[in-house]
Length: 312
Ligand code: UDP
Ligand code: MG
Image 1 (cartoon, rainbow, N blue to C red):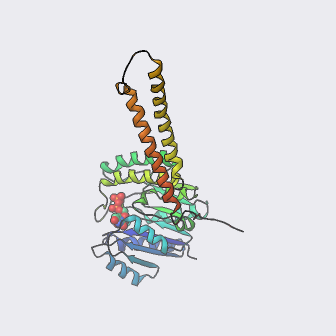
Image 2: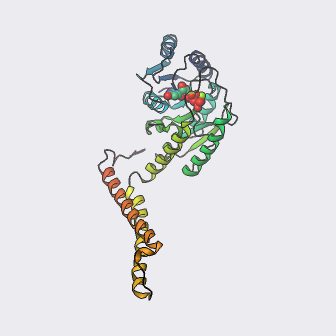
Image 3: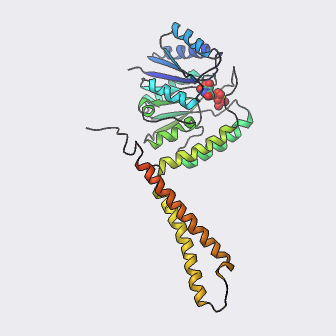
């Protein structure tokens, strides 16, 4: 088994690739690791694939795959993970913003210190302010929701024990939340290492401001699916029941009051009547959503697929 697999998703990064491959090769060989370098070309429209072919013909530790079109970084990582076979799997961005000099340190944290996953932390960043400020908020929200104490969830430079990446599926734009996905699968020894960050040397960034909105929505789905995906009724049912009960309580109170009270009024003259009505309707709808969710998850193909780590 190889010591190390390095997975690099890339989209239009032709200028960076030769420098990156040479640098990685140098660092890894100095440390005596056996390795493979997997380039996942996410449907580049420049000469990236040709560059990868040339690099491959000079160094057979290099492997590559090319998507027919652009699917996104998560898809790239997911397919790269399928190919990877080293004890330790390291991911990096292709734009030379992450330094290959970090590889040995990350490798040791996984193999010797027993971490499942180590995430880089770009403590000092070389990015525009429009990116660093929203990123801070975003990391704070993710920390609060996931309970994972990382400063920089979306750092492209990460190291994994091979078990982790074989047990998670990175889809949509979930590459931002791999630590959360890993924790959901029970890999909880998650560490952090301060890494050097550099300004982009060639090319341009591939993500615009929409990354923050999409990122936040993805966080909500991960959180929800991880917690209630297999038991939607517990979520919707509880809320629905509480809401209905609240509305019903109001209705009961109004009914009794109507009989007991001396002054004559119409039910609809009391604002609280509408609150009760709405609460009961919403309650019923939430309950129905839970019921439908339950039916859906019952017929899901993976309803009884659990990941078993050991048997004897
Ligand atoms: N990337 C990719 N597919 C995409 C967009 C980006 O494989 O659709 C790669 C990109 O080539 C780079 C990494 O993901 O290797 C990170 O992208 P980028 O440097 O543009 O992001 P930023 O550093 O601005 O967060
Ligand atoms: Mg970058």
